[in-house]
Image (cartoon, rainbow, N blue to C red):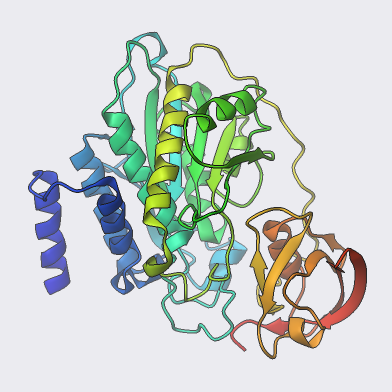
Length: 418
């Protein structure tokens, strides 16, 4: 009860503008620490912590001055489909959850068109489902980088864009998606029930895992989804003292994919996978807050250019990646620690877990995984798909590169949480 009273008091103060003035770094630290606090219970589907997070986002949207654009004020509720394999495995089929949707009205001739800016705010909760930490049963996964960071950037971008004005600008819809970790559920629901017609959506910008910039490059996926995107990104990058790499199509296991499959050009901001990805160690103390502000600055500048440019975008549609055979092996465990700050043509490892199948197979830091079973591996998403295609106890062929040499071995997969 005391926590709820404190939240209501904070929400009232925030809405009334009575909180002390803060720098951008202080603002994002406040938002992220709230979202990634232990009391949010890892923002798992069906938890009071996830409900608390959505309430917080609605209050901040209102304080910024966005208009409610959900079906229930700022909220867009939906039910998790019990037939979804991930939901069934995680035991949350039939649970109610909600997207949080706010709108910044456009102006002039472009106002009937829409730019969507989104980030998922859910995470793994205490579930072993999706966790890469084999000892994580019943332990809170705070998901500070995944994806409290993107959600925090979403709020900061809304603040910055609310302060801008133009004679002609597209309407901007801000969406905090739920259910991403279970298979893009919230964004899939949104594209079927958009706040503004999907046919009027000019582009979508997604922020997922943007809290570990440090000395890394900022990667923007999806630059191949519109012919105009590379030049547009270059023009923004030249304004900031930051290394930016643009690459890739619109697929890739985050919410931009739901829009790209509906023929909408998309961009996905990302600062890289790290050893805390989907582990209980992804906590707010490891977030680069000044770097997160920088990402929000770059993304808000790019979003504003999308909102105000008069020329159309030329969609480039790539064929979807082939489905992975098998599909249901959610418990398979390899025990690698990936480093995807850059794409080396596979998944580079920073290390392996002691006693893990990876260690027993002779893998070590610096190795680059390129194939597991019959599945080629070009990035972490492919690796996740490959593990899901197999069951614990299976022995599969593993191919990796060490010091330029291709090595093939066999590995017996373990069980997460076992």
